[in-house]
Amino acid sequence: MRYMFLIYSQETTESLTPEEMANVYSGHAAVLDEAAAKRILLGAERLRPTASATTVRVDSGKALVTDGPFAETKEQLAGYYILECAHLDEAMEWAKRIPTACRGGGGCIEIRPIDDLPKRA
Amino acid sequence: MTVDAKQAVEAVFREQSGRIISTLIRISGSFDWAEEAMQEAFTSALISWPEKGIPQNPGAWIVAAAHRKLIDQSRRERTRREKQDSLEYETQAISLPEAPMSLPDDRLRLIFTCRHPALEQGAQVALTLRTLGGLTTTEIAKAFLMPEPTLAQRLVRAKRKIRDARIPYVIPAPGQLRERLTTVQAVIYLIFNEGYAAASGEHLVRRDLCAEAIRLGRLLSELLPDEPENMGLLALMLLHDSRRETRVRDGQLVTLEDQERSCWDRSQIREGLRLVEAALQRRPLGPYQLQAAIAAVHAEAKTALETDWYQIARLYEKLFAFNNSAVVALNHAAAVAMSGALQEGLTLMDNLDLDRYYLFHAARADILRRMNRPAEAMEAYRKALALATNRVEQEFLERRLSSCLN
Image (cartoon, rainbow over all chains, first blue to last red; front, side, top):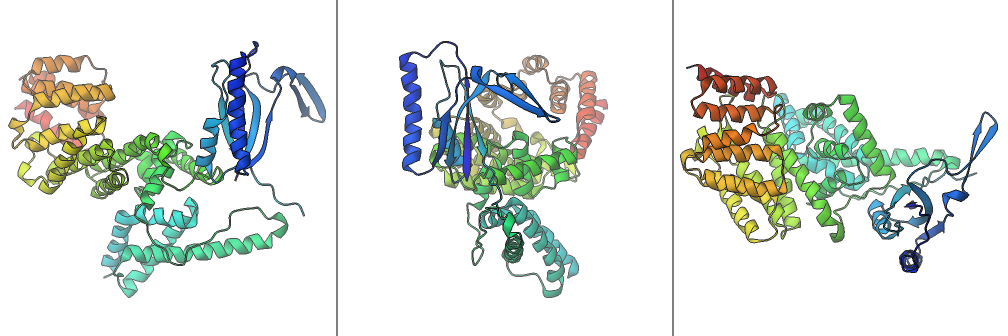
């Protein structure tokens, strides 16, 4: 089953120290390398901070465009992975290894099973 | 004959439904299909057994019948999917084994799945009691003081999540096992307690639930023999259960003090004591071992008067370090009082905030009775009575109350 791992992190205004940056990078690199070697890596991307986000909401045919993410929360969507896992326990093990923290600010991973769409005729 | 057959069906359900459903879930990979198939198999048994006689191995008969239903079900499902070719969902193919076989750890698989941390907490316990304990939704709703539709909704949601997020039907890998063990121990003990003091209803002890919990405790101990808390839990349940026959006499509750000790189950006590000793020699110490040690002190006293209450009070103090609840503090206070320091015990109790707990008032009443303060004792018994829900317990309190009058 395909699972999407949504990475929620606190957005910091200050930039990370080189050491913190290196830790985050090597954490992601380890997950990416291992998942790729196991041929279960289906996708992974990093998103730009929510300062660059635009929200479009279409209501009765009219588009309402606003600056920023759809919800102002302490932790924001910062990126994602898509991995093929046998079951939730395996997905949970991967989730524990994906870095989420910036400056000790915590963060978390939301695991969502991907719903297979019916095949198009 | 008809009555016998019906009773046999009911007995198999009571004693084996947990084992049967756990096997069917493993075979079918679906809680819903397994439940449906088991229900149909029991219905078939109600028709077939009175006619053809009770089979030699009734449990195996039910599993085999349910297995046939599952095969029918999977055939129907396949046809249904083939018909809607353009709308074909990529669902896992259902492959059923030739002959159904119960594996000894099926029930542990089930219990770890029901107690999966990705499920809502309240639903975890309810799902365990429903599937493993064979309790009805009505019984569980009653035990949790919850409206039945709410509970039913929770169960549906939990089963849907197991299916959609693909929560596996496995005993967790060694890396996850330990952290998930405590919730499993807790639910086994909960099933035991549900059986030992059925929350409401006519019977104080539901034997089948206690026996099921002990069986599960044994399985857990076998799976992880080096875990002292598993031994502690099993010992605790065995020692409590050893007093089963003496706890109720003529439908009336008998306190530990007045129980006929010669009727306690000696073989269960021996096993319990051996386990407590073995567990305490290992590390680390834990709440089940301590509670088992307390039960062991009771089991070792030949008469109620010979009970080493001082030792029990000390064990409760240690238990408080793991579980600093008011209920543990209440038990500690009662032990202090029983060790001879009645006033000290009463003072400890009066500092507790347990006004809504019937055993608090019952325990206070008991100390006051022993201190020869009948008026206050009666007042406390009345408060306890107003809060007790179990009929056997209510009758016990009424008897105590009227004995204060004399």
